[in-house]
Image 1 (cartoon, helix red, strand yellow):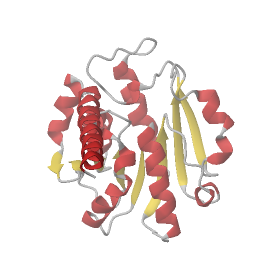
Image 2 (tube, rainbow, N blue to C red):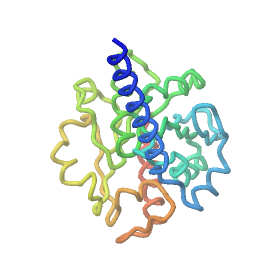
Image 3 (cartoon, rainbow, N blue to C red):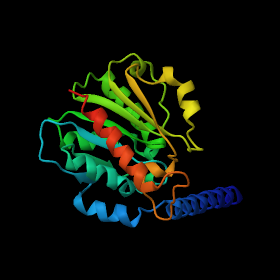
Image 4 (cartoon, rainbow, N blue to C red):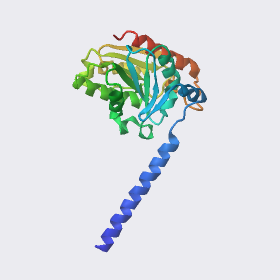
Length: 241
């Protein structure tokens, strides 16, 4: 019995060590925001659930953003600030280890904070996939405040209720993205909401949807990709009533 207890204790200790080591590795792997993004985040208000860019217009929808895997959510502050400047408030949601799948329902706290406001939800890469699942759940709950879902270099979670809904949807890819390829997204076009608008940023790459330290766009300067992301989101949001 004592021997068995020692073995179990040893295994648990080993698992604990691996978990701690894995967490530390993930923390070190998180991509930090660029200097320009850190400058932009100064215009946001720090909240328990993330960073909030307010606006002076009460009639426009709140934009809820989930980050890509292992990307500090502040890296999306450049185009978030641009949207807020034209009237669309933006909430950048922080995630445990910047992995949206670890806390997919975190948007619920944001929605409780803005209980009377219409909103759209989406994100980058894994964040967009996770946000898509949240949108499907909100549709099932008949949440009339949900007005749209957006995917930045992201797949959908292939939910039938989303596919058949009249929800506004924006899907943006980058022509130089080696992670989420434009052709793969278009092959899965039927999986996205039926009212989806599909756009490709010529020369855009995967990390260019954020602004992270050390990243240099090979075909398109990151600054230009950020501007195009902001413009595409703005044009799409203007179609939502």
